[in-house]
Image (cartoon, rainbow, N blue to C red; front, side):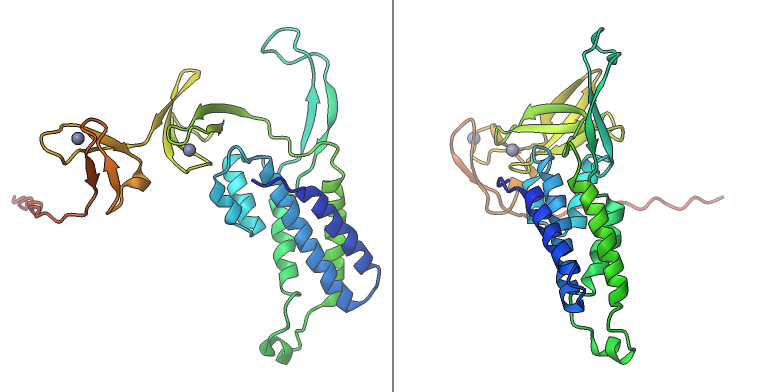
Length: 277
Ligand SMILES: [Zn+2]
Ligand SMILES: [Zn+2]
């Protein structure tokens, strides 16, 4: 993920919005709403950067902040929760410290506030449709101003957080069996004894198995037998590599193979005879 100071960009957007709101002009008001929408986007992208070791790269293509935050909440159910961060020295390892020092409170933009305001602003950033004009509904600017003031108050709190992007949790880490990059997986209460983990870098699927306090990582590969006779070797292929036309070299005989679709006859399942009484 590129190193962009989204938090700084969000702060700049809010500053510009405040200047526009102070003009008491409906045209400037629309631009204030646009700046505030962009501030919300910047703050969600900033939040995403705290999870860069955990999110797949494909999420960077998602620009809709609600979709991004939904993905972060799947990874960490507390991704949008207010958290107070304290530190202390443990007298006994494993037991909470008796004296804790509060570092500050992290107030991220919540999904509830994002959902309430982001879409609401969207309808003011387009020309009203003919149907809306005929219905006399060209936008309630007083309502928009009120919403803008509310969002400024919310974003001021988010931007004033003494600490930000803290992501505490229990993790299991492993080098990806395909690309070698470290994968960091947050362990949540929702995880069963086995759960899938996708590499953020190359999207290779792994299966993680809980064994007591340990986690055993396995590559979710399928063995495809070599087609060169009389070789009995083969290659471990990832599900996304099993496509028609894929070339691979046998690990044993070093000969080439190409995957191909085939059609073969199968017997229809026999119907059970109906029971008679
Ligand atoms: Zn990988
Ligand atoms: Zn072979």
